[in-house]
Image 1 (cartoon, rainbow, N blue to C red):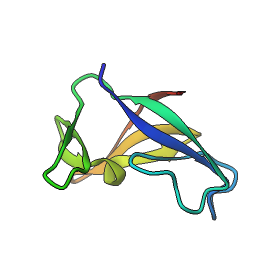
Image 2: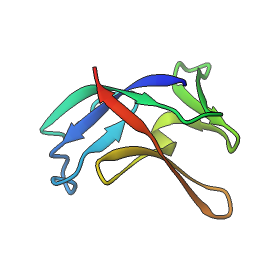
Image 3: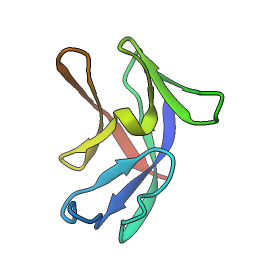
Image 4: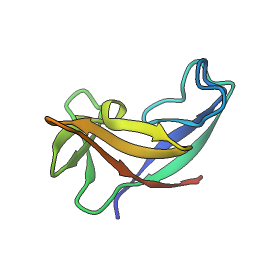
Length: 95
């Protein structure tokens, strides 16, 4: 299983009652943030582009981490559109 460092952000404006996950930096509008480790599902891995940004690569293609990382029910998930919406939940733990 491939893992990457992210942030669980709490009290984000307009999302005060839910956890918002981000990949590269803590959310600027969060009241508080915890550093977390997010586990990618089988078949997905991380890479870095020439600008040093985190990529998440898998069967659906290569995506910037902050473009495909979403939150639902206080859990991180991969969320993308390729003619239809796709969602894959992920596991996480505090570092």
